[in-house]
Length: 274
Image (cartoon, rainbow, N blue to C red; front, side, top):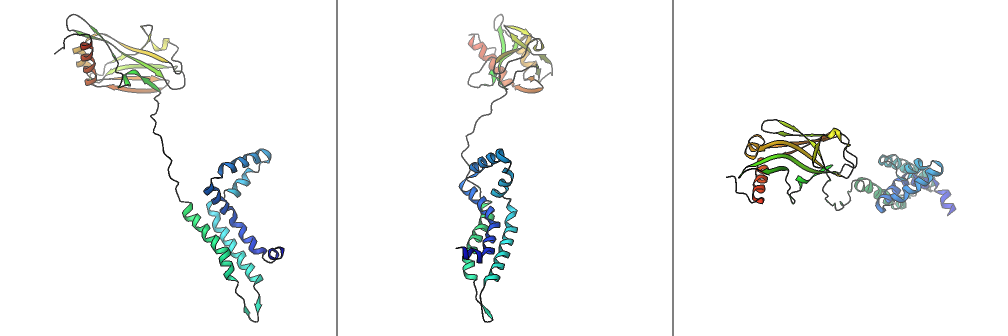
């Protein structure tokens, strides 16, 4: 064994340049990356060798070309040194080398061109609905709420007294600076928003904000607008809410407003307006 190594030491060296690339492919194919990262971390903690180890165990893709060139040159040199002479004719020793070295080189080139670009089968993904930073009760279609405060006057008269909503702070942080308003998308008139504290409207700046993961109530008071007039002036409107410099807008359609008024009149057993 030692005699063979001493005789063909150049051939043995020829294999060394391509060993890192072969190792890299083995790591990729057998998913050894996590174990290697653990070893690298421990070596880094011990003496700062993780950078060198990382290069040797995960060499860049371009390294294959200079490695192949060095391998071929060393093999040619080893063959030149050790090929026996018979008279003026040299015995050919290319056959064994083609089998010993050619096979691994072809496999390595295949890994470089095909294995590098092979894409693993995508894992099944679970589609999840993103959680909104502020969640409002009027957004739940399965539990329709009265986003308008409605009261009945004499006979079949209905008044709109406020816009009202219950929200939840899902930002993960307390809400410190809060503001908002209702804007008519018909007349562009605006009404300011208040925090609802114990049934009383309080300016947002007069509160301490909203703690994380807590519910809160807001209201936009109107001066008892007739439902028919509200449909004319606020037939569609927008609710704008801003917290800590993050504005957000929700729009309400004429159909939503009309359906809510009709629902109120039916639930209070009052005759239709028509």
